[in-house]
Length: 97
Image (cartoon, rainbow, N blue to C red; front, side):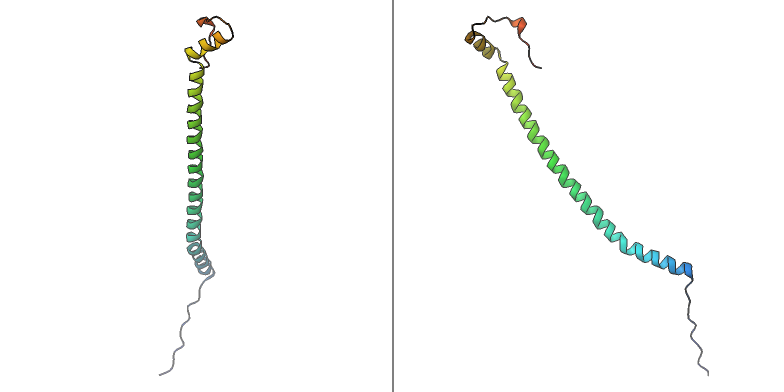
């Protein structure tokens, strides 16, 4: 019995290219996944900061609106008019709303 030579399988050029592309894809998919999750997390943090700023501004706006309503109240207008010796004429009062 003679020793037979082992037949060696030779890859074609296109097969090599396909294996390289497959290897690159398999290595890059987890990295892209991590990158997108980090980007999403960063966007969520920025969104929460903006929501917090909006809530603070809305609270400030409500406070200022209450102050405006107090200053425009009929009692306050009459007091100011009396203090400066003015007469009260309701037709001349303009509400800022």
